[in-house]
Image (cartoon, rainbow, N blue to C red):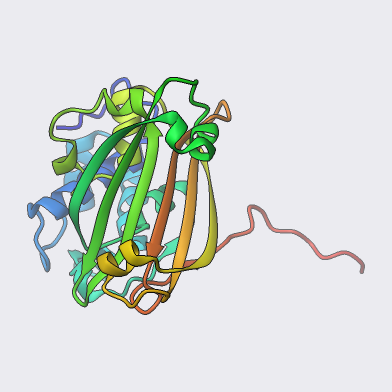
Length: 261
């Protein structure tokens, strides 16, 4: 169980307290502790449990609201939504949103292969892997109510994957791979870069996503970087555009007055 202290920081964890709390609540929702339609504990109860400020609790709950996991009802409380009833539409407002909201639905057929870094030299270069080291390649299918809609291949240093516990696949049902990298490898993502493009489905992707060979797919390349500038994770995700879309919403950091009179 996550432990918090009155100063708003989790023990030995630099992650912001609001984000840690939102992840705890998210795991409880995913695990059925707060089933669909259930009311989340009140602010006062969450304050007593986590020992942080009211502002931190509100920020944590707002994360769940922005992720489409809960909905506030004025005068009544905050209630858990059915994620399968929501569309595959998301809004990214922060790095946490990009990590958390990239994909919904259940994960199927997770795999892990440890490969020579030289087998994918461009990816090894992105991750700054030394010659002779190993590259960890993860793969899994995302499936929603209509069927499969995305297939992900995610790469990290083989040395990172070797630190994962045996139940890593089970943990991915309620955590993103980057969360496991941060938790077990003592690193933290600071920024992310995403490139969107289109690509025709080859035979393998066509089989996995149940589309004809040559179908245009959405291709997302995401790279997460540490504060030092080194890449921690590289992901290549292919999605069916008829079942998945993205909306990125940007906010100005501070008001800017127009020039002139």
